[in-house]
Length: 277
Image: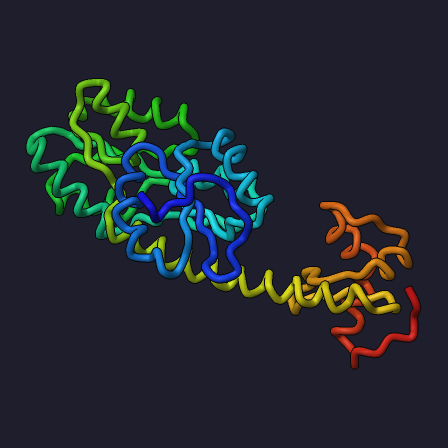
């Protein structure tokens, strides 16, 4: 599909870049929705998970071609903890779960239904089981192994239909069970909307940071610029020499420790400082 860039490329100054990390059944939904946003963003399809996805994404991040990552479930949670760019998660809402339960009870009207959810079970659904007239058995997962365990336990408890993410559905089918994919087209489209907007804002902030760095780099005085949240936006070589620091990945943390006390005092007062760094 021409919507997806096949390999890491240099950052496009126009459209922001979004990496779609989708394994199993989520991939087809992403491929259905992505063409609608082709004019607003470039998409990079990553068909890996967890550590392999991080390794594949790093080249895009280093090239500056990916501003945001879209993912789901425990895979998305893992990426959020291991990448320096924002990760937007596909969120499952109550309507999605009710729709999935309706499809599941159509497939298996008389037996218990298994529901596999990321991180936590739905207590609201547990209270509605009687009203829905379904024996709903829920399991939560945080890792691949926990998905396997959840599907195995639900099968042992008599569930013949499993509702869950793509991996749970695949494992259910391998065990000879019916399955219903939990994520809806609407949920994925909503995640696309959030991703595109966040990528646009991130690209604007990065462009501002580059321009600011270009300006302060030519100043003879030492300059370090921070945003309202105290995050480093720009620093010039004169400031690094003044503080005895080197430009590396730990630079923002080093500057926060060194300049932070003066910065906080300036924000709390009138902005003027008598102390010299």
